[in-house]
Length: 522
Image 1 (cartoon, rainbow, N blue to C red):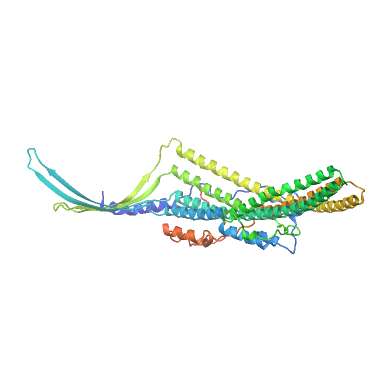
Image 2 (image 1 turned 120 degrees about the horizontal axis):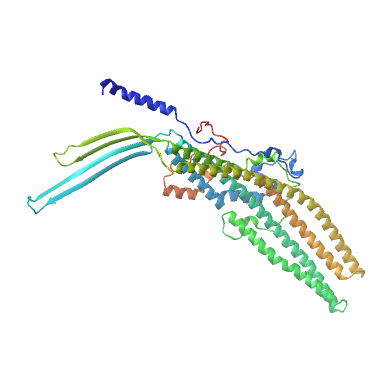
């Protein structure tokens, strides 16, 4: 080979490498957030929730402040710090951050290995025609290997893109748990308070009915009334009394469920100590102006979109198997022995390598189809997540409006029942009505009074459900607050976490709606 051509060969190789690198592409589709065609036209089923009081706006991040209940606010803040599910979600963020680091490492030389060996060899020869002989030696080997698969087709870039989207999904999952925990604490708190008040109503009516029973017993013993009035009064008193144990069971269950949300063992909650207090009067719920837009800000909707982004990148990773993998290989080695006549040997090797799956019998094609089918599943899951979010908001909005209407009617029924009882007592004392009318009036008042309380509890839960449906009750958690300090110390004692426990999370914690790349497999 001519000397001039040998000198030109490295330059041609360099030019070819630059040309190939310039032709690199990123395979697979770029992520775009799925469109929800019906969302712009969607409205509440009832007009009530669509209006906002001009002088009273609700911060969805702290929607529970609308109830003006310091105990509730304190319980929710405590749950955000100590809830076990939130702790696990915080650890999953650390897990996904580590996975993102693993994916990013593939952009650099994948193999950077040092190797070495030392061996002692002893050979002995005895018997036979040859003279006895013994020989021993020590051999040494040391080397360094480098292998870098160039990302011609965007395999590793897509891997980072997928891991990045999964990382954002883990942040959004943690925010969704905040939404759920906030709503669950409020629901259980109001259930506890409602049950307390129901026990109070039952005890109050039982006391009234006991007094009626004692009066009829005295009259019966004096021969003034029949035994029928006595037994009817006794029956009504005992029936009312029998409802209290079940209410007490419900009260303990609600308290224990709250303890679990707060990460505490079942038992008394100091925050709930003291006498039962009335449920908060909020004077009508306050609703955001654009619920349709708020739906897309729900953490579970954003997490579903991030899952679509993560899977979209998997198609490009699968498609890259159609093309050759081109790597740069290099190695440096040294070996020697203790034998004086043996030379030490040094070696240097460098050059490109090619790996290409020419015959895969449909494995690669079917893997691409598999990833595409999974992508479409996640797109449909995103559509369904938005649909279910709209359903939750609409259900809660209707419930808020209609339970408020029902509450006004029940309040009138309570007033009427109280008036009927007053008249029945008067007519009974004057001898114009029998005692059965009094018992019926007592039963009706007790029933309507309890119905009013139960319905108002449902109303409060509907308000909670509305804010939950709108995705309220979460905020970006700083990296230092994801997990408690004691668990952080355990992690640091077991493992070197580097800066993963201190580097701030992405501001806003929202995955981009669309990636910037535009190149695709053609």
